[in-house]
Image 1 (tube, rainbow, N blue to C red):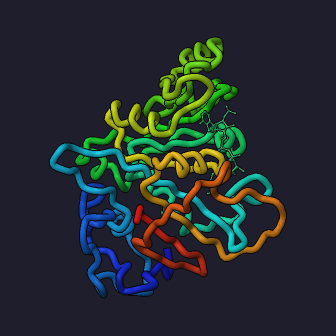
Image 2: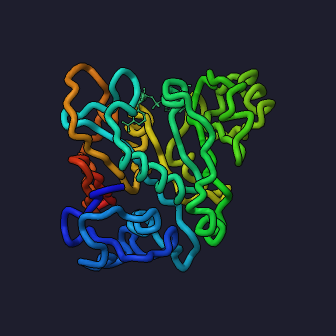
Length: 282
Ligand SMILES: NC(=O)c1ccc[n+]([C@@H]2O[C@H](COP(=O)([O-])OP(=O)(O)OC[C@H]3O[C@@H](n4cnc5c(N)ncnc54)[C@H](OP(=O)(O)O)[C@@H]3O)[C@@H](O)[C@H]2O)c1
C-alpha cells in the first residue's frame, strides 16, 4: 500500500510490533513512538496489526473487547447501491483484512450477509504465526445475528467455513430454521429471551466460548444496537472522500441514545484522501 501515513505524530505505531497481544491498545498507555514509522511509505501488515492490537490480557484474564469497523462517505452514507464496496478503496480493504486477522469472531447482521453475499473468512496467511501464538484458530468465526434465520444455509458461509459459523438469535427463533442452520453445520447460540438478540448477552455468550477479540462489521441496524446497549468499546471508521447524496443509511441506525456517547481518537491514518480513524470509549 502506498502513502499510508500517520496524519499526526501521535499516530505513529511502534515498528515490529507483535500484535495481536502487543502494545498499542486503547488504555495501554502511550503506544506511539513518533518517527518510528517513516511517513510516506507502505505500512507492513504487521505494523498495521500492531497499530490495531486488541487490549492486552488483564490480571483476571482476557476481557471481551468489541470493536466495529465501518466506512462512511463525507456526507454520511454507509453504502452505495446497497453495498459498501463502491465507497471503499484498497487501503480500506487492507485494514479490513488486518482487523479480521486480529479477531476471534466477526459479528455481522443478517441483512449485510444477505446483501453483501458474505463468505467464510479466509485464513489470513500473513497472520498465521501471530494467530497461533495468540491461541487463535486459523481464521475468525463469522457470527451472523438474525431473528428470522432467513439465511441461505446452503451457502459456503455455512457449509464450508474454516471454523464453524455461528448464528446468534433469540429463544423465539423459528425451530425449523434452527434445525436447518444446525444441519448445515452452523452453531446456533441463543443470546436473547424472545425475538432477537440482546447485544450485551451476545458479547457474553461469545466470551463464554473463548471469543474475546470481537469485531462487528455492521450493518447500521446492528451497530445502532451495539451503541445503544453500551456494548461497543471501539469504532474503526474509514471516512471515504466521496459524496453520494441520496437516502443511504448512516453507519448506525435505530432509536437515538439519550445522551451522545463520547469516544476518543486513538489513531488516525490517511491514504489517498481516505481517513482511517480508531476511536475508543472516552
Ligand atoms: N458502511 C459500512 O461500513 C457497512 C457495513 C456493513 C453493512 N453495510 C451496508 O448496510 C446495509 C445492511 O445493513 P442493515 O442495517 O440494513 O442491516 P444489518 O444490520 O446488517 O442486518 C439487520 C438484520 O440483522 C438481524 N438483527 C439485527 N439486530 C438484531 C437483533 N438484536 N436480534 C436478532 N437479529 C437482529 C435481523 O435479521 P433477520 O431479518 O434475519 O431477523 C435484521 O433484519 C447493506 O447495504 C450493507 O452494504 C455498510
